Structures are given as structure tokens and as C-alpha cells.
Length: 285
Image 1 (cartoon, helix red, strand yellow):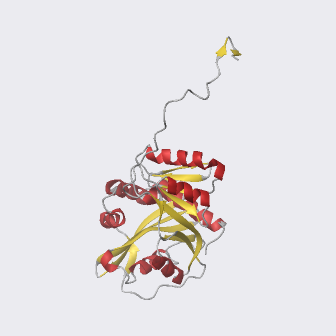
Image 2 (cartoon, one colour):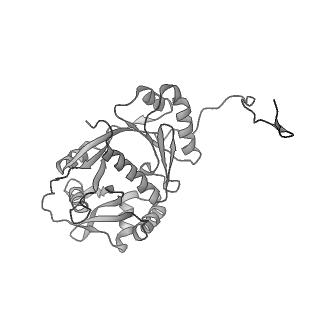
């Protein structure tokens, strides 16, 4: 089971946050967490709280601050809590209506000597401009499609210094069956949003995509390759391709029927603090 955060794992998590930023989002750091946010693309991969650690005595203020950040924007965040989970953090999330997802999110990092995928009839390559609409449609559907497409298009063709974004496709018989977005930054290469058409799953398309996107001729030899798995099937498959678990998180999400609101605050109370007043250059007492 993944354990303590390593330098490579920290670098990969930071690269994921850069990936969200380069596509138009932002990351706000607060005590105990990073608030990853994209106001125009309301999907969990772009709107989540990366929990670092919260003391029991500070959890009320932590949850209020984190939730208010998203609720003011009408966004439904998820929380990534490091495993093993702190019991008071778990209890706090459940109290606010969040529920844990069955399988953890696992960060996997490529070993130096990875096993190449088996021979396949799939062609894996960078996408063309004409294929971008299809790639985005497979990744996000209609949720934020226009914004997501525009963001990928800009980052793809006008990358900031030190970064590179490439949409990848796996093609069988002239038809795109699997896609992903490879983002390189600060000595890392992360493959995000790996998606296979429902009718083509279980036939090696995602494995071929991973192999092609991380081929030696495709990325720098010293880059840290990483991916995230959110199912046991995907995790086992990536292990067989030479990726090792580095960290795992329990993801908490709000059920669709839960309202985005805090409980009523109760009757108004007088201010607890008033700013100092200055009279004739002297501080009033």
C-alpha cells in the first residue's frame, strides 16, 4: 500500500496542479489543504480539495473556509484525503453530507525499467487539430465542452515556457477508441483523462495509449512519468506496465441530492471585533 509522500510523489502532485492552472483554473493554498478550482469547467478533476493535514481543534474553521470557497461559486468539490484517513476529518466530511467513493484514487509513478505493452493493432500518436473536438467529447462530454476545448487548444499550441501539452489518441481501423492528455512540466510527464469508448474497453486500448504516450522516444529520459487510477482494474493494469503506487487518497463527494449550503447561522450577533480608531494621530482606547 502506498505510504509516506516521497519527493517524486510531491513533484507529481504539484505537476497535476500546474496542469489545472494551465487550462485556466487556479489553486488557492490554505492551512491544511490546496483548493484546486476551475470556475468554468465544473468537473471533479478540476475542483477538489487536496487535504494535507488538519488538526482536530482546527477542523471547523478548515471545513467552513474550504466549503465556502466552492459554494460561493456554485461548485461541488470533492475532497482527497490521504490514506490512512484521520478519523476526525472523515467524520467531518460525513457530517457535511460527503460520502466516500468505493475505490481510492491512487497515484502511480513509472519505474525506470517499465514493461513495454504487448504488440497491438492500435496506432498511438498525437492528435491532429481536426480530432480535438472528438478527443474533448470523449473526455468531458457536454460538461464544459466549449471551455475545455478552448483551454486545451490554447495550451497545446501556445504553451508557457517549460511546459508542453499533447492530446494523444489510440486508433483502431481508422477510428479513435481511446484518448488522453499528456502534460509535461518541471521534469514530469503526466497522462490525464485516459478515456476509452465504452464498447472498446477491455481490449487493450488504454494500455496501448499509456505505452505510446510514455514511449522512450516520446518523453525525456529523466522525466517522472505518472498517472492516477480510480479503479482496481486500472490500477492492476498499470502495475503490470511498470507503474508503482506512490500515494493513495480516499475521495469524498457530495451525492447529487445534497444542497450546496451551510446550515442557517442563527440570529444575528454583534460584531466580535472592531477596528481601532485614530483621533488626532493617537490611537483611541
